[in-house]
Image (cartoon, rainbow, N blue to C red; front, side):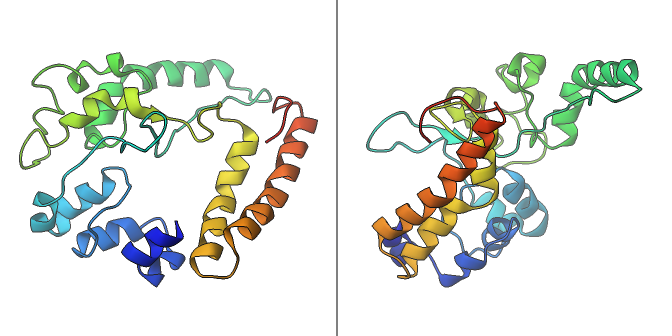
Length: 217
């Protein structure tokens, strides 16, 4: 990661926010970003020349193991036990699920359902991903996403997602570990040890709640 930073990044990466990928791409200054198609969709409106010069790849091949990448955002709907509107909430979820095709379409193919067969337009030949209804040039630029379910995984791979993984991810322990090494503040070994010292108590706390299984982090 230190070598990657020194050879391919600029210091502004340390002040990255959620919109930074989009902004750098639209400005024509990024050669590669790891992002959902939101950056591309924005570029189509703001800077069509850049959008036409953007192309996509599925998960990159690494030297070892499977080629997978984490999903970007996974909405989850829950009904709290204290709710007095359980039946209404259940009906809403049923109605919501029945409108998956419209949800995908109105999101300009940004939001996919958990089960692709709920929206045949995503997988059928000549469907939305083969002929983007929102003006991709060429029209089949997004066809690679027809196989997204095969190379998408959860945060925590190869294990399951769990609350401990979610907290580690949400508190940026791993990016901070990399940043300290990239900036020369710590050696790789020191950074790993510091990150481990933050991660182990997180796992211990969630294990005490009975929401993470036994074993080491």
